[in-house]
Length: 152
Image 1 (cartoon, one colour):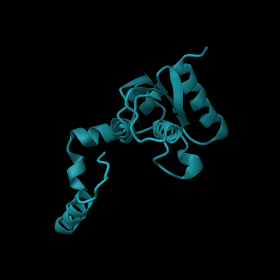
Image 2 (image 1 turned 180 degrees about the vertical axis):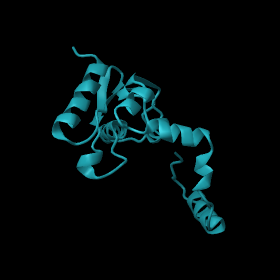
Image 3 (image 1 turned 60 degrees about the vertical axis):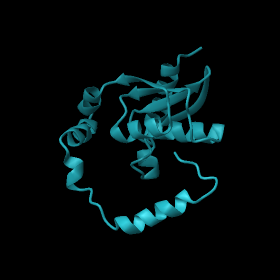
Image 4 (image 1 turned 60 degrees about the horizontal axis):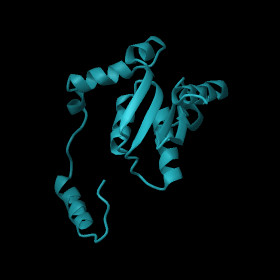
């Protein structure tokens, strides 16, 4: 039986060989069973959000018919980028095991370290601006009134 990391590596190889994206693959496991798989499909879909971790999360959520992956573990070929870390946290995944580091990923031409530096240096506040807060707060009030809303 292949380890979960070996399966993540196979996912990454699928993406590389098909020209769909970079060398990033992931599998998500819950209760000893693989519930989601994914590899980078940024090039295939012309979509910068189609990272391996995101694709695996989408697959797992579809397979389990839920947006809550509590109790799951993600195996991925590289340390997740900030976007993927955010998605992992939103999905309530319990743990992440990764192969290559941010520095390894930078050496092959990817810029994850740039994003981490921008976050650390407060660069985000330079291009994120509040606008129409009162109008948007009314949306929140409307949502709060829903009887069977799901806060997530």
